[in-house]
Length: 234
Image 1 (spheres, rainbow, N blue to C red):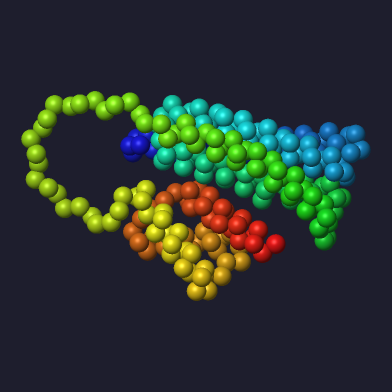
Image 2: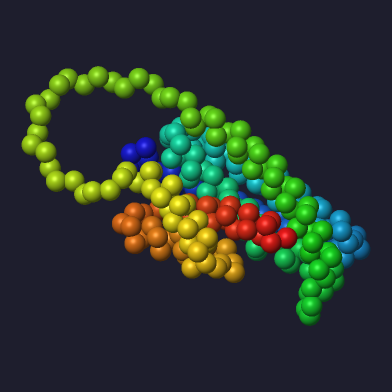
């Protein structure tokens, strides 16, 4: 993927993610209004319908963004951007929308949270998230196919070699980063308490080793690792 395609895809991802966020806020607000009018606001139905709305919007977001991404580039780098955008949307659902939904369902807008209702809400959310991530994993195969054969250009005279900056191509540094993070966890120099700690450690390593990566891409990888750490702790 060249710089122009990368920039175009970044603009599309930003626009579509913003539209999905607004659509999500409107749907959740409509659920609250509808359930309040019907006397069902403080019930498990509010959680189920709200998470169902998150799933519908998330799948529509995935389908639409996948189609637009493939129109620009159908390669692993483009899929990484697509995957990171979907992960960011799901994080918005989990961090921005699910907490007020569970509080509204429990009737505890202020004061201590109802842990049983929050746990039930998280379980329903995780099921929805698994469906979207499974669909995303299937879509990955559409971005692995080889593209059309390259156009053979007329030969040009060789130019004098220009100095090149050392190091691996950008797409190849992730294995080194994972190895460094794993070593830090093993020796205890990295003791993350939140996903942000993991993300910060990854970003610091990338910067220290003269690489670059989009915040959303780093966040998606940090989220995967943090989910595994939390699963072990549980």
